[in-house]
Length: 330
Image (cartoon, rainbow, N blue to C red; front, side):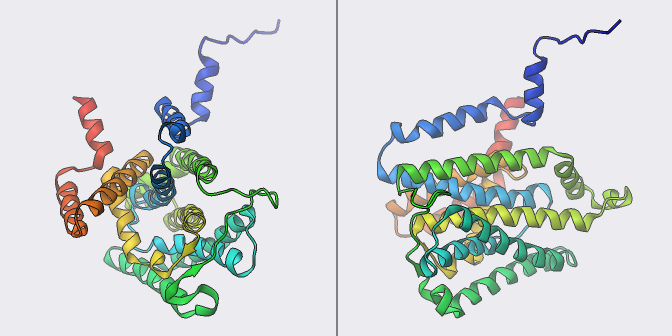
């Protein structure tokens, strides 16, 4: 006699939760709020700032994969953003190719090559030497962008990046609300893919390597391969942010590949809370909002901003997300 399978109430819902990797329903609420944001606040400034926050959130989430999960603090992560940005800008401004799929493919290929080269070199070092190597890589990319003026525009940057065609030639994504929704869609997909990745066995292995590399090596894990894979994935997502950044500004410059932007990204991750992807979004939002508010109030806003973040890093450990979790536990 065939046995009938007993399906308990909520089993189907539980399977969906497992497929989503335990994704909190609050993230869906946040996504809905971002979807209706243009209707709530239709001003051009607010929409532009929200678009910028979403673009940099992809960048900081990719850095958090290295810094918070794999334990690889990089001061040269902006190099991958620059590679994606320059690939998009050269295709658009120099070759007249504005197709989003082509720009995405070129950005990923270029950043993959850079990430593998840097990863293979960086795996041979540790500590301060690792930090200096990532910083040197970013400076090399910035120097190349400055010297290859015929291709990159040199120190003046490369203007003339046109709005992208959405896969189909002629179906152009205009600035403003259409581009905001394009960025929102790519940011949401990036968050979901990275969330699934860090919840997977690969992500858990990265966390184990971060906390006790010696023990993971003794258990037979190939530490170098895991770190190289983390570099590669982080570089890809950073290049996607670079592509969107070039399309958003219609411009890319060597300064977008240097230490300053990399340092700001590290601050954004620390403010939100490292090792928590949602913390990257929170930290990016807080940083850019405070920066815009202070710059409109005082010409010495960088001094005030730096002092605020020194205090924050010293006294608010684990960032906003860590503070929220401590409050919830109480």
